[in-house]
Image (cartoon, rainbow, N blue to C red):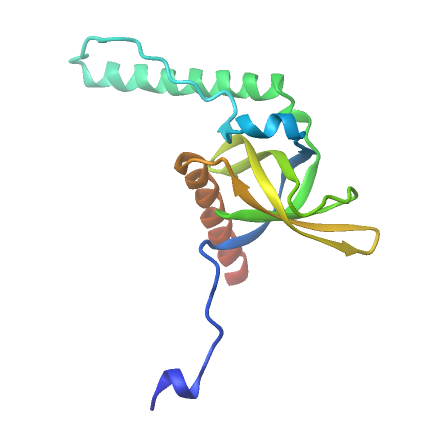
Length: 179
C-alpha cells in the first residue's frame, strides 16, 4: 500500500499553527508618514541593568527576593498597560498565528494598508502587545469585512509570545474536547 498515492492530500501551506481566540483587541490604520518607523513591541517591557549585584549565599533569601522582583515587574507592567489603554480594549474574536491574524471589522480596509493592533494575549501571564500587519485580504461579509493581515516589523521575541499563546489556546481547546 502506497499511502501517498492512495490517500493524496493537500499540502499544508501554512508556516504557523492558527487558532481562534477571544482577546482584548483594537486596531487602527497607520498613516503613511508613520510606516517607516514601525516596530512591534511588548507593552512596557523594560529591562534594567542593575550592575553587579552581589551573589546571595542564603538560598531561601535569594528565592524570596526573586519572587518579590517578579511581583514588582508584574505590577509595573500592569500599570504601564493600563496607562496605555490596554485595560479598556474591547474584547473581540480573532484568528491568529505566528504569521498573521484575521478579524471582522466595520472599517473597509484595503489590501496593502498597514494596521497597528493592540491586544492582550493570556497564555499563563498576560502580555500586552503592539503588532503591525499588512492587509492581505479584505472581503465583504454581511454588515462588515473579514480582514486578513500578515505581520510586519516583528522580531522573534514577539512572534514567540504569539506562538506561545497559540499553543496554549490549542491545548485549552483539546482539553475542552476531551470533557
